[in-house]
Each structure stands twice: as C-alpha cells, then as structure tokens.
Image (cartoon, rainbow, N blue to C red; front, side):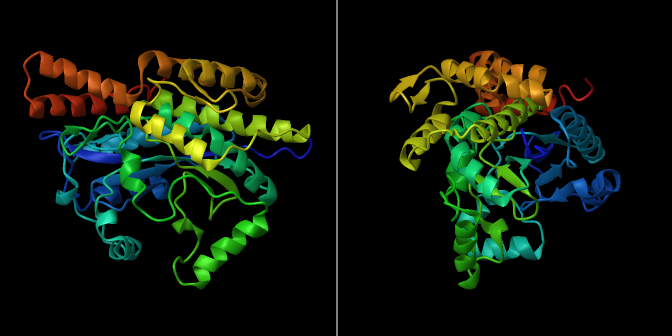
Length: 379
C-alpha cells in the first residue's frame, strides 16, 4: 500500500511489587533491587512514581511475536530479581487491599515536581497501565489516525480491565484505575486536531505559558509520542496474563493498519463526538464487556461480542498481512475466560463463600495475580 507505515510495536507495562509473605505492596523498595534489575534488563526497566512500582519496556519490535518474546523475557527477569528479595510483581492496575496513604514516592526530580504540582491527585496514583506504541512515521498521518482510533479506545479498555478493587473494597467497577488517573489534568480522550501544525500550536501554548516542559505531560488515552515517531495508546489497564496483552497489541495494530488501508482508498472511519465515545468509555470502566456497548452507527446498546466479531472481520486481512492471526484470535479467549477483573472478583467471591474473611480472600486474589503474571512466559 504505497509508503505504508512501519507498524513497529513497543509495549510498556507497569507492575506492582508485593511482599510474598504479607501480599501487601512493598513500601520501602530494597536498595539494590533496581540496580539488579537494570543489570539484567538494561534501560528496558525503570523505576516509577512509587517505590512499589516498576516499569518495563520492549525494544522496537517488528511484529507481535517479537513483542511477546521481549515482554516474556522482561517479566521473567523482574520475577527473578524480585524473588531474591521476597517480592513478586503483579500485572494488575490496582492492588486489591494496600492503601495509597501508606506508599512512598521514588526520589527523582520529575516525580518530586509532579507530586508538588498535583498534590493529592498524584499521591493517589497507586495504579499501573499498559502503553502500546505503533510506528507511524508521518506526522500528518499520525494525527489523522489518532482522530479515528479514538472510537475504538473503550473497546480496548473493556478487554483489559484489571482494577476492580481499591483499598480492600470491591469498587463495583471493572477498571477503577481511570477514576484515579482522570483526576489529573490533560487526561481522558484525546483532543481532535485538523493537522499536525494545529496539534503543535496547542502544545506550544501550554509550554509557552510554563505549564508543561514538553508533550510528555499530555496524558491522554491516546497521544502522539513525544519521544518516538509513534502513536501511543494509553487507555488500557495492564493485563495480568501475557496472552491477553499480546491479543490486545495485535488487535490495536490491526485496527491501525485497517484505518490506514481505508485511507488509501479515500475512505475513513466515521468521526463520532467525544460525548458518545465517553459514554462507551464509562461502560468499559463500569462493566468491562458484560453489559454491551453502544453501537454508535445504530444508536443502540448491543452485545460486546457482536462488536468484537465485527471488528475481527474488519481487520482479518490486516492480521494476515501482519502475520498475527493466531494472536488476534486470542481476543475471543478474553471474552470466554473473562478479564483479570472478572477473575479477581470470582476468586474473591469463591473464597468468601468458603468461609474466608475479607482479608484472607483479598490475599488469595493477590496469590492468583502473582501466578497469572508469570503464566505463559515460557511458551
């Protein structure tokens, strides 16, 4: 298709570090842990805002298989290093019971500035996400695809939910993480821009006013990366299972290729108002995929499975071209098995039904998260 974008892939995952004995979040990170992780993973592992968080990032990957291999290696290395200190990572967007008031910040100028500026909104950020970069070198194309991809963000969130608990309580939401993150400025659905120049003009106003240093302080659900020629999707919870991560990465890159393919035929995805997309975003936070979503073309709520089957058929030729048909098919596994949030809630319910206290049931949920985070790393 002419000068097709590279559609390279980069995935960043944030994990919470828990004490294997208490199952609570670690408060004081062992001094040598980050140095040990960096020795094995190099710059692919970094500290995060809180001492109880750690982030990994893949190299620039040419396809989803390479991304899986790199992520499996990174997860495995973090598990190994953490285990030396009696800790384990969990790939979940919130911790089932540890409280944000007990967490300590990582000492870094950037984090100190953030906490000073955002105050209580930043101190509550005991949340983890997954960010997926897709290589789209052309600036104008990146903005055009960002405008169109916004429609699909709620669907991606619904399939990734992993944050049903907060501070020891069932929140009633499958993705509570975004209620915390949305308290920060410059979050939520991305703005719409007619061109790259218009986008830059708006960023420059904020920079000129001294409000942000650069566009890394724009934390929308989807943004042009400030560091790479990529479109960065940030709405998703971190997936506990690696299989789910890779299924969603496959779906995302296939959707982007499909949108590009339409463009080469002078077609495009219909642009809907942010109001309607926000409604689906809320439904994804609240229900994951349990109660359906609005089919915006029809104006009615339809079963989520119908929307996904429609999407899978739309991107079938893109999956074939990108060589990720098998990985994309795993999206159906998420629907049949449930997200991490579904699994956490089910485990909690079963434990309580068998006589466990709330505290014991929540610890059992952490145990499942530890196991599932390590699942599928050797396949």
